[in-house]
Image (cartoon, rainbow, N blue to C red; front, side, top):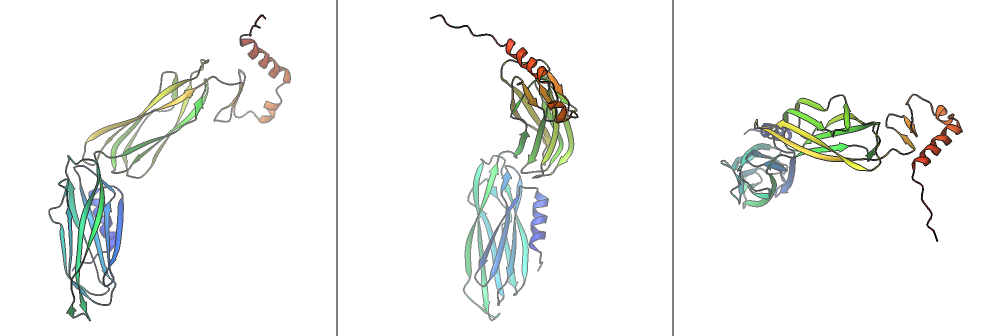
Length: 312
């Protein structure tokens, strides 16, 4: 009888099939028989997946005629060899094995349940067989029509002209490993990138965040109204079956007029139409003559249209 540790069984099954993150169900049966079942949270329609079983006899008596039958009530999920048989398991003994399932390509997205029927016969004083023990266990499996690729962005709440801002993108594959990954950030015409807007990677492991840091530079042309600028993040990759796929997400940033005093993300500051670079000390800022600030304020007020009084 082949004995395997639970960690090894789970690692072997879920590495081989490359399915989504695993979940675990553990139950203690009559006679202190611990049964642990490791299954995927979700699978992609058309792909295979495993159910991994680890059985340990923590009782005082031996068990025999141990049987596990896994079945599905729907045609979407099926298994060619869905039964495990163990002739006898001594106290302190353990056993691990895997039952392979497949999902049909036309499976409808949703959560389905596999049924596992467990049974064993306890040997009283390791000799006398007692009545067979049986228990049903429901295993939930979510079916997805396509793998989930999360595209998250970290950006300022608003931007203004003639300045530089961070634009960070995070990519997470929730179900499978990705190969030949390409991430392209497509910006509107009045925004440019410092550095590259397209990034390539040979691979990305599932549930491993990929962070791409970028800097965008807004046009020096002033704006008098607020409006939104669309950015599109396009992700191209090859899935675990060798198929090339593309997904995308669009985010919008609010472009607004610059106020009288603006602090930039790199530590600089705009005072009216004067920009003080990050290396200028705060003492320099405080040391700006009051007349200069007053002149800037007057100039700004002159640009505003005067309101006429209504005649009585």
